[in-house]
Image (cartoon, rainbow, N blue to C red):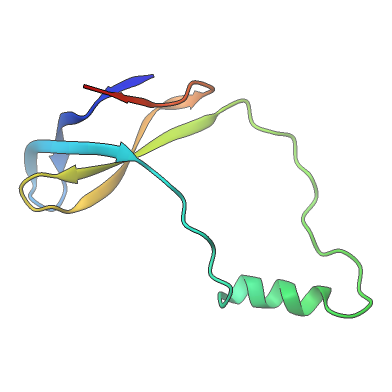
Length: 93
């Protein structure tokens, strides 16, 4: 799936259509001090069994997500292109 570097899109902060620059979405590392991580570490300490979730079947494809940044107000937001797809997003000119 090819997407241009600059697209016209609606900005929810400016409340109008402006030019947006597109960049790949990258998930950040999870914090070691978050509540879920601390609860998980506390549960697996000692002689306890596994507390990992059950394995679910894999989905057919992921939703492709990109970050779009408004050229007017410089605010960025997420945008999903397409439905579930196996194709990766490729940013072109």
